[in-house]
Amino acid sequence: MDFKNVFLMTDLDGTLLDDKKNIAEADFRAIDEFRAGGGIFAAATGRGVAMAERVIGLLSVTSPCVIFNGAAVYDFKADKFLWHSDMPDIADKYIRMLEEKFPDIGIEILHEKLVYVTDNNQTVVEHMAFEKLVPCYRKLEEVPQDGRFKVLVAYPAEKMRAVIDYTLENCKEGVNWVHSSPMYYEMLPPGVSKASGMKKLIELMHYQDKFVVAAGDYGNDRDMVAEADLGVAVANALEYVKEAADIVVSDNNHAPISEIIEYIRNM
Image (cartoon, rainbow, N blue to C red; front, side):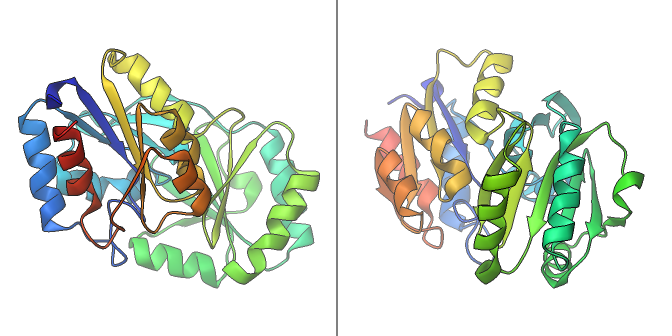
């Protein structure tokens, strides 16, 4: 297939990025070749602006990307939001309920280019250290209402099931919940997902005539993978993500994007 007919969108963590959060040299080369042939390359990530910009910069991505797990389309080159969906007011009620039910829970509110921490724990501390971010520590009522794009629950993986079960029973109206990693569970605006973000980006950039390829590994990638013209799961993906995919490629530690691009070339 001619690359100029293709729009390739990939998840970052667990897909493009290896376990040490690096990008394989083979993937760098393949992405460069793909773009040189006219292909459009973009990312769809749960990360916000501050967490994603290092990776986007390394790849010199020029297309807008889907961030905040679909709550925004952002043009890193122009440094501006092209579209976004804010959290509803009911999110505060759900945060209060989680604080009461799970006193040791960690809560991060991703707001435009800032990360607010309203409830700190060791999982949050490790997350901020790993991302090399300095968050804004605030009480919930001190966090600006406008520009909140998602709420991230940070909790040890072995304790997360209880949080998920509680939200599905008590906190499901008016929001969308996604499990984005073993220790992260995210509250998004209603109807928002990476799949909806991908559709919005395609609409904004007039990519409707492109052959859409989407790659991912975790639950928050599943619908995006399922709805693409070519859905791709990496070998380390959850089983139900693999079931939604058209093909399964190498795991995130073995240059899966280069394999995807080679597959596209041979279609």
